Length: 238
Ligand code: SF4
Ligand code: FES
Image (tube, rainbow, N blue to C red; front, side):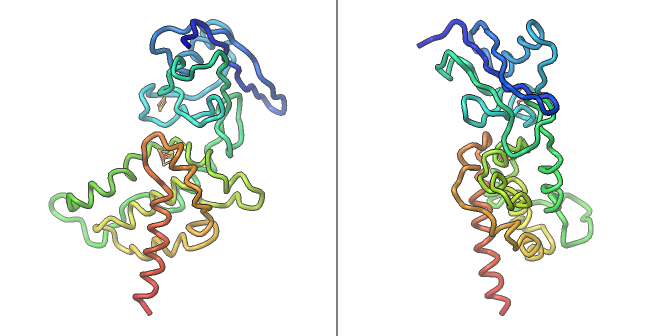
């Protein structure tokens, strides 16, 4: 059924006060949740806070809960939700600053921990450091991550008490991306750095991150492959 008008039921939060506010929105062809939020901010409530930048599924800023599923607001067309009410809430597992804006520091600190950059094994060559083409194709999905933190929001581990220090899917997937890069120096050290319950062994392997990643990165695969490489690498070193 096509709805000509829907109600956005938006989680509002400022300091310790929280609740839901409802806003009617006319549904025009192609209208996305992000565009609806912008319309509400422009015409109904200028204090509504949310984050976005590219509007085209590139910057990763607009991840949020939409009708109980984590989605990019800029890539979610309202008519495909097929609902008269659209509930919009902030990304789980991160503290709320205001309304739909979450504090990302925890996510970035964990990402930084895995040193998400190439640490080459040799001196700078005179020309580019080329990667084998077949390997590039294999690693492409990991390189497609837009750091939206949808996987972190969907992950059951940081949601549990006592497991907040878990590095999370995006960081561990990025660690695998550089581990698997043939140009990387200290590959095994990379795995050792995340060889802990806060790292590779903390993952429940329930694939929630895979389900909700908007870029098909498949972080669980990176985690499971890292575990395998760590075990076989240790055996080979014995
Ligand atoms: S792995 Fe996917 S869900 Fe996680 S931050 Fe990257 S793009 Fe977003
Ligand atoms: S606004 Fe950039 S990903 Fe949605």
